[in-house]
Length: 452
Ligand code: SAM
Ligand code: SF4
Image 1 (cartoon, protein in one colour):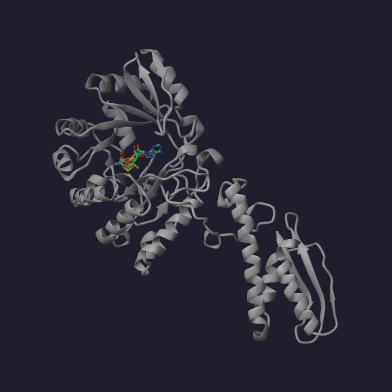
Image 2 (cartoon, helix red, strand yellow):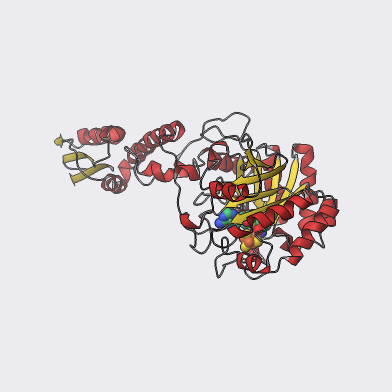
């Protein structure tokens, strides 16, 4: 840690000793501005002895600066600002060069200390696109409309979920404002409504219709991810409201497997929902999270079921984002294992990977199957997504530990320019992704809040 210490510092009489200190990872050059200031004070204080030395910690320095008599405060502030500027420059250099891939890793770097925060960093002008420091342009926004859900999937929900109070949720006006900014100013072209379970929102069709107004500003696609349990009755209304396509989660066909992965629900309403959506003319994909030992024996039946109906199906590796701490590597039925299983019945041909998070395989040369292998083969290097929770937190990455509250910014009177600056900054410093720090993600937020 970088540091200064003033063990015998007595402003106004004698400055006997100033030590420039550094710990194992420090560099005294970074505190040159402060030292310069101290020299200046020393000159004014009469007899002095400046004694640079390599030793201890920065906090002593900053505390000492804060304790200066009021007369010296402007100079102390200037010295402190100079120090922060220097730290910002270093931080930006490390982050932009990709030497540090996360803010967390930045704090452990040589020349840094553990108090670097997003608010201290500056964002270079990234041009017209919304891009991060790794050059990944953002085009897709996933917005969670609620953290509530009528399922209790063990790979997603905590046993006792702590749902956010309605007052914490974005109001419709706040939601409208954010979506408009993300489309018109930040260039998002695809919007995915998610949750929790978005079909629990009574005003879902009205929200979709409002999103439709954004097409004039550049929005190209409005999609939704749902568990499908309440879909049958609303499929037609969703189509009329203007939804373009759906992803429906379906983790098993037998009552036992379906119940095990939904928290005791039945599959019949979901299957009816899928049928109703097809009838309503809604393009849909099926998503299956595969948990080893729970539903891996249902992969082939699911493929047969989807194939007969010509419904695209994607298998998703179990990600370490569950709300129960139940994830382990051993429970991930990975891409290789999925291919191996499918090979028992089909000829499996891999297609070239595009920008989609899924790798596509053709079964018997004609039926496409997607595999989202976030754990075994992450697609972080081409990630073009951003996420907003129902209470307006921006999560630039599915694995981000936290993000800025756009709701709070708006409720505190932020202008559009200020909201956009907050977003651009969080996006610019988006972490490299799961690939850079694989393993269990410990954080307060779980998938039903983040939206998947
Ligand atoms: N309730 C809706 C649903 O289940 O489709 C939308 C929200 S859900 C959080 C979005 C997606 O995240 C679903 O496809 C779900 O299967 C997936 N998901 C949730 N937890 C997951 C985990 N730990 N690993 C992989 N996918 C997960
Ligand atoms: Fe609900 Fe979807 Fe999470 Fe299952 S995966 S608990 S359906 S939000």
